[in-house]
Length: 339
Image 1 (cartoon, rainbow, N blue to C red):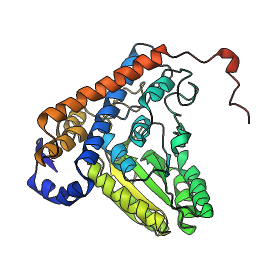
Image 2 (cartoon, rainbow, N blue to C red):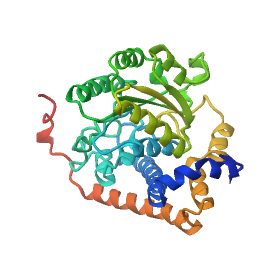
Image 3 (cartoon, rainbow, N blue to C red):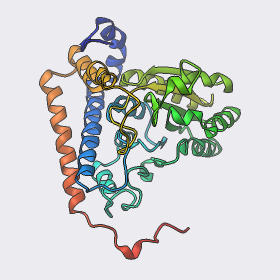
Image 4 (cartoon, rainbow, N blue to C red):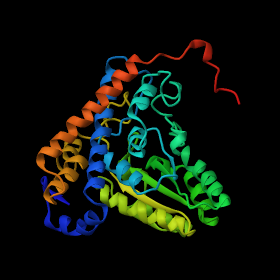
């Protein structure tokens, strides 16, 4: 789509129909959401450095297009399950940034009353069933959600997002096999950011694309550019509509890249600075999508700049809300622990 930061003509031609179909407001919202996710993650890292967020965190800076493209491809009433690098997924799903930040900072006003923190944010009211600190932990849960949908005979879909490392867990294979056998309405979205902690995908897999594993379960598998929100949108939308028709699950692999380490303790000794800079300078999802929309006449340069400022304002207010919120009362520490 992009060559040295410039939008290629074929990209405009390729997306002309989808740009016309989705409309300018929808596309603007997608770009705004990408800016908001990045601003949230950057502020979260800052708060961690200031000692206002405890434990660890897994930032998704660089992966905004996958979250936004996938979430916008589903309908209200569908279900989401995601993983420990899931802040962007929640925001793209429509979760309130104030309550997200409050959860991050361990406050009572957070989605899980400050008990979940970075890796376990859930917004059950919007059918966001939550993140999971266990690698591939959400993948088998999606089978149960899919079976529930099928038994209730609704047209809902469950999307489960997981990393490339999870695709080498036994839970991945068991879940895809069962979902395939029962034709469950599940969209499996592998967010391949090139590294499982510190293991590059080239050393962990003997196939070019993780999506090739779909063949083993006789379901569709497709690999897309995970830094292109429209490519992700089209692939996930097709998989979701297939599921709604009762035709079973699909596997979508979204190839993207994380700019930061696996977690805050990661020294990133397994990759070069040149590699990171190449992704940041030449393949950045926000810069690419913004350039596409400007070139296509959807937004102006001034609007593109204003979106970044608006996102920062949204996150500034979420921090103010969180800092003004009370911490959980110690007397409530056992609430929610036992059924």
